[in-house]
Image (cartoon, rainbow, N blue to C red):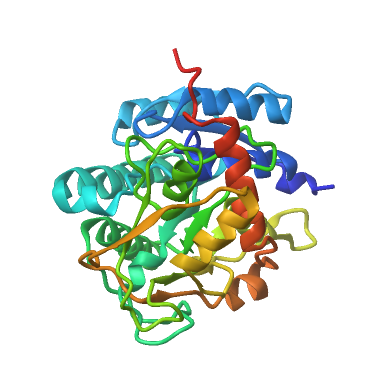
Length: 359
């Protein structure tokens, strides 16, 4: 049972999205109260409805954009938040190359507006949805939090720019507690099959592409490059189950909560966290062909594929050192590649067209 000081209300921006919905369930299971704020640009109200059913509780949902200061002001004025988990953002690498201003406007300017409102209402606990893309093409593996950062596309650059903003903010005011969770490759779905990844149009990420081929929605998988210096020539990535990832956000909030301790006089003493980057990954690399094989075995479906040219900016291998998350947060990934494939197939086979109940 959580201590009273941990039962605080959290604002979850982008909470109707893929990772956001799974994190809402994890927050509920951990005893946190939360409000979801989302503009539904790349998400669905039906996803929120399904989360409500899964947790047996109506979710307070506010449709709004993080760039809308007046809307945010109303939200902060109406609630007393302990902190914010910030998922709201655009995330397609290819689209970011074609539309960089849209990405900087949403991901960077929107985050600045959010942080300004947090400052105005003295909400100084922030968990940021960052990305392993901030490491660019890694010099060595596994990647730890001290590895050099660089980016090869506007999406990654927008995440890195926000990290720089958070670093500067921490220096300017030591009351800020800012955790940047650098995700590797989130895949999978809730074990119920009720919520999962539902990309608009053709998927940008590998796992939903594989699952849509398996369910017959797409004809075949295109694998970009088979001449990398890896186990089978295809790219190697650190795939992490979205449920494990969601739990990582809860442990980050728990860590921030635990920085408040009674000093024996009845008042609380706060230890500043500052800016704290933490990797969330399994620490293991899996190639594209290995993932295809695992999915085919779990689903019993053949996955036709073809090799095509490498994509500009893609790298051969990328996987995490997750030692810091284990040491500081007491978190580590628990679910396997087979679990990721099983839950993805469960979601996709139950929902071949994703969230279809939207009116």
